[in-house]
Length: 114
Image 1 (tube, rainbow, N blue to C red):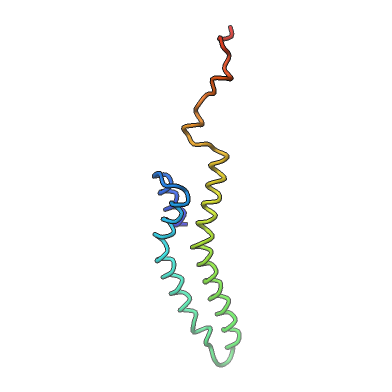
Image 2: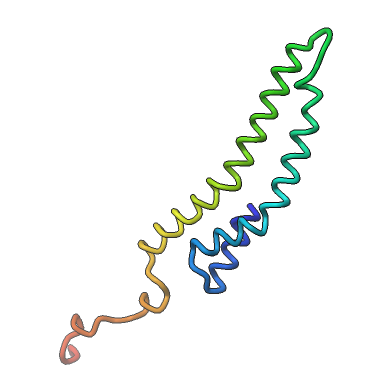
């Protein structure tokens, strides 16, 4: 969520969509990795479990570990890519504000109707 919020702010400030997504990702990259690695390291005891019920803990630990790893990759790479993709589609459907208010004079009547 914060990657996209930073990217939207950069884009509104005048950066291109791609540059805004890259800058937003760069700003949030370290905090995301620190949080994810801390959580994954907290799951290591489940992965190395021994004794009664160890197999169930190992399976649960692997699911949590891999889920966190995959969600980190998705959050850092796929989400900004989707932001760029969706913003470019939106830009094609909605022209910039400067062009939206223009009136094509060729379609106006030559003299006003009474």
